Amino acid sequence: MNNRVHQGHFARKRFGQNFLSDPYVIDSIVSAIHPLPGQAMLEIGPGLAALTEPVAERLEHMTVIELDRDLAARLAVNPKLKDKLTIYQQDAMTFDFAALAKEIGQPLRVFGNLPYNISTPLMFHLFSYTNAISDMHFMLQKEVVNRLVAGENSKTFGRLSVMAQYYCRIIPVLEVPPTAFRPAPKVDSAVVRLIPHDSIPYPVEDIRILSRLTTEAFNQRRKTIRNSLGHLFTPEQLTELGLDLNMRAENISVELYCKMANWLSTKGTKLPEAKQE
Ligand code: SAM
Image 1 (cartoon, rainbow, N blue to C red):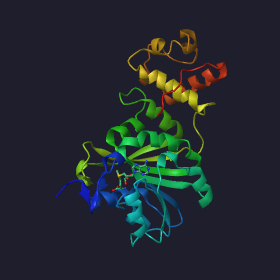
Image 2: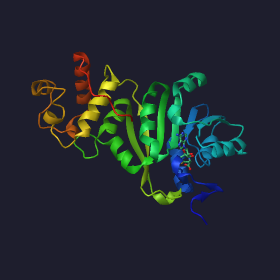
Image 3: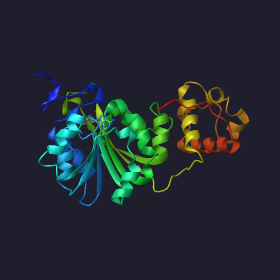
Image 4: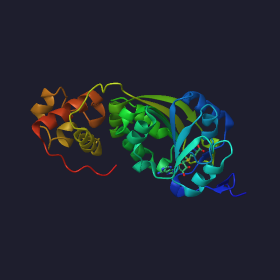
């Protein structure tokens, strides 16, 4: 049998389709999400409903966003789901999560086994809606989860760690081997929980500056900051901000990055255009 065909659907690579098929893993994920009646559950990429069905079982209603037209059409006629689902057949990257939370009248609980090809830009998109979200549970490449949770002074600490931790508390939940999926991905996976902070611990005046500053720093992560950020700060300014000139991008804490970003905002420093996420 063609191993790209699962439940009669040919898995589309361009949509990052790797369907969960291990009942034990599915059960563990649903328990970790812990959906309760009345909550505004929103799934990104329900696919063939491996997570949707057990989650919806516990609810009166839920919302899903599925880009693949064939899969959205299948969900619409799924006997266990059709009366419970609101289906948006669209790209989650362009979805207005704040508008939906407003319509439902409560913050969203977002979850999904995300298409790995767009998981990082999708998380950045979601970070801009953290006021409308109470928590998120995502299946991601394990390597991405490692980067999300990394603290400073670690090899995996990077721009994604800083930006994600600016907005959220991040808790790894479960590791998942390739054998839990059809077709099996080439990499290990993991589920992570992201809980937006009630109040941002180190607020910045302009998030775009934090975003660009971290891009500048981590694009040259092997250089000392005296060199990599020399076009933005003099050595004296870096010292004044509490940095050691021999530090590299990975040695600077989220708190310090925020302090540096606010200093740049105050000075009105122009940063190079950020590359698209
Ligand atoms: N939830 C299912 C499961 O666990 O078996 C499917 C997971 S599969 C990794 C990713 C799903 O996201 C697919 O159903 C795919 O069609 C959908 N998808 C891909 N890109 C999307 C996008 N930009 N917006 C919404 N859904 C997307």
